[in-house]
Length: 154
Image (spheres, rainbow, N blue to C red):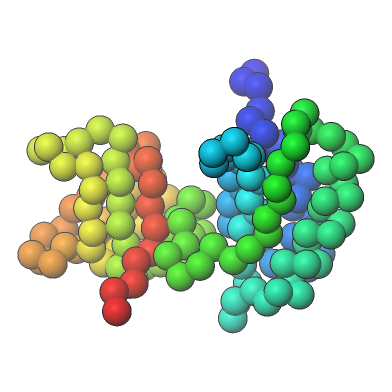
């Protein structure tokens, strides 16, 4: 069995606190920026999250992380909304995004291209189809996708 990443461990710890705040756990990132480490917890709910929602997750989660100590060095804990250009990770995210403009990045280029944009027109749990500005339908399997997110153009 593969060893769990810090993000996976923290996601398991955070989930009850996120659910208690009537929110959805969107993503957990553990990243180094400069000399500092950041643990970012992204939460969402219909209508968007408030500062109170973030605080209602952050305080008890911080206490639990101090108690369990899954990270051996200092880090900054941030709890926030994923923003407008929310990442698409879980099947429910893709299903919810049908009809929306999305950006798809692939692990391996197709015809020399790794980044595609278009309207998400279909998702069946294993693959998705986007319609590009040129009215082409492009189909990708979930295994091909390194990153996917909704996009907004103003």
